[in-house]
Image 1 (cartoon, helix red, strand yellow):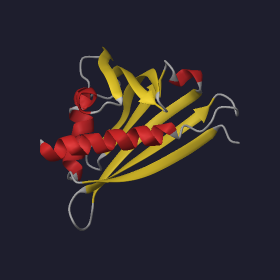
Image 2 (cartoon, rainbow, N blue to C red):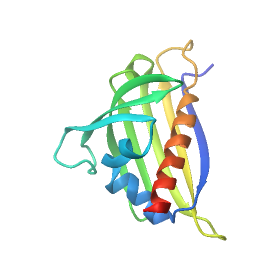
Image 3 (cartoon, one colour):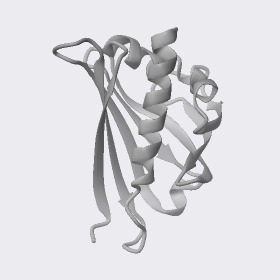
Image 4 (cartoon, rainbow, N blue to C red):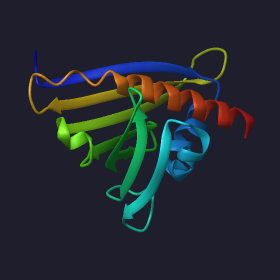
Length: 153
């Protein structure tokens, strides 16, 4: 069993790609208000929630358990609707040397809406740690809740 791994999931959303991407890049501080899977989020370091390098502290649910970590935006590519979050400290550091989540949003060719693709890249501290499949469920829940919110907004 390898220490490094990569998990991916795609979710179709009704929201256009640019609007969906904008939520995660410019309105991330609202995510705890639209989903039960995020308990709290606060700006920990920096002056802007949405700039590369600013640090946020999160509390959220994975596999039915409340967990905490810090997060910073590592890559922000508005032209291609790509953002990468680096998760660190808290519960994440107990199992992972590195943990990154990338969101790529692209418009669907037909029928409107978009596809939100989440890529989770990680390095476990040891082989006994299971792959973080609960994070796939987490991003799916958050994606669906964000889409439901944005469709009615």
